[in-house]
Image 1 (cartoon, rainbow, N blue to C red):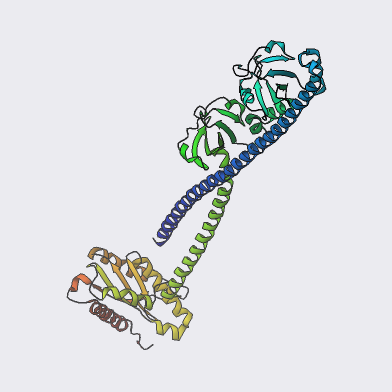
Image 2 (tube, rainbow, N blue to C red):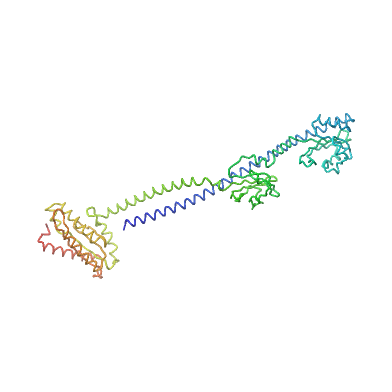
Length: 483
């Protein structure tokens, strides 16, 4: 019974341990996922700062280059104006003007009078256009009202190629005509091409499971992305529905599905762009399993060690308790255990089927004195073995003295009759190497036969009956009770 109870307790402890470990693993997993998400957002914020820095540096470089080229082109315009003033005949000679284009490395020269009419230059097709009305040159009309003013602007070509020409305009010293030079700024064009948003983003370091997107702030059209297939699409079309547009003046984090991949997205507005860094959740959390398995292994080992320690300590406590309450020779409970157990019966709280059995081994002193204590010990052990077989399944057995025993069992009349007969028969059939007879005097008292008696009175009555039986034994055998 106790073995089954211990096994059941061990099973419950194992199940509880498994549940605790499972809950702990789930908790650790959630903590790790949350930590990974926060780390992803932090790294994305740093990447946004890096992208902003790259865009800003690119813009600064372009602004610096453009300013430098403008100054250079205005200087060339003034130089050509000076030469024309010194040689007025060149003013209307295309070949001479063409020679100046080669001399100053420009592509076009145009001359406008004070009314804004283009009257000469290397491109006759533009003759007759007026600064105030020309679609191509109209942005320079303000020069007609500002004699000390110079301009240098980019103008798109009208040939449908999408290329641009940079025009620099200045008055001659006499303010008699405007000199415009047109130059194809190849270096600037190359820089512009290299500093397009799509090129800038494409050249950023590639990371597995991480996407960079830059979209126009007004229409959310993607103009640069680490995945070039996104360019031209809107943020909504790739799965990023911005739920906090007003918040992205600072870095704003949200979970979104980018092209079917659930992602941790960080967004920010910079200049005229929205910058997005998206990290796939599957990639961010791909290394969670290994440390969790290590933690699980550690917890299992730790739990196993703890269970082993607890079991050993429990076994030790049980053994110590058992040893403290067990008679070493017979294995029966000792007097200490007897006194502890009968305390719960002293208030009359016992079942009617309780039977108090007082027992005393006959002839022990005679055997000890004449045959030796080993023979006496054999009698004690033999008597206890018989008691265990007859009474053990119905209650508890105690050795309360050298040759004194008590059994507290629960049995009705029929069962008690069988127990008594079995015990008498077993003693008759017992034998050892010394061929001694085994005799035990007994006194039985059923709680139900004397309901008016308390437990102590029942015990005294059982002792009286046992002593009566003992007197009859010595009277019948003729053995002196003092031997």
